Length: 285
Image 1: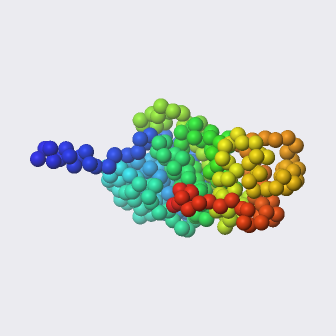
Image 2: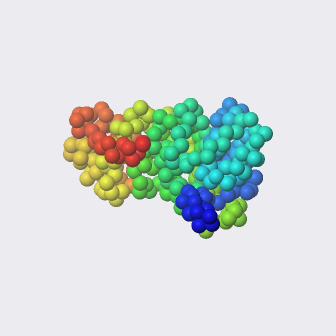
Image 3: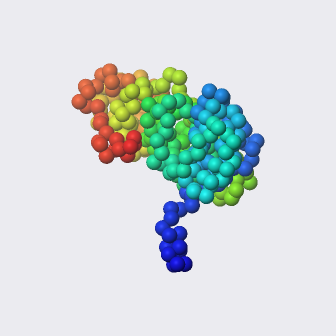
């Protein structure tokens, strides 16, 4: 019998994602809620809700709180702590296979560090989602990468067409249990009132970025050549305010918008780069 119990225990899913460090400083959690401008009209999602430190404070401010947690034991703790909160729904599920609301929502969360990029992609890759604002605690290195002027990942460029992503501040390791081995930071995400690219055109823009961003240090002239003719490139660089060449990693969000608008207006549709089905599934699946 003991062997059977051991076998069942071994087959059980991991307790939680590696890199889960639970926030216990209530003043920082209140700061996060204030940064997100949570009100009684809002639905707010807490990703990796853990023992409910963020969830319970959100319940005091929001209309509805959706607490998503993967660890079965922590789900029991969450449900116990929020049993009197009629506005809290606890979901025992992997965030990566959880369907997010179609209506408008916010995110306030201290997310598992090991899947930071995956969570950000789930939230931001499709601008037709209901995400309006988010305040997220994450590993500092990832926070710097998502907000740097030098962009090395094409998805970060795509996110910036529709969302402002701001590095707010560092957080000391002593504010977590267990303390992480890496530094942490708060990142604030806000949907742009005037997006650089119309959200309905998101797959067209993704095709352009995917084509041009084969290498972040690829020279702009070379990156543009697959879509634009040499005379168009010459005029486009004037419009971008670029006299010499530079790598695509140094283009600003505004400059990417100019490139996209130029393609839409002056390049025949058959020359627009398109995402293959595999990448559509990868980015938006």
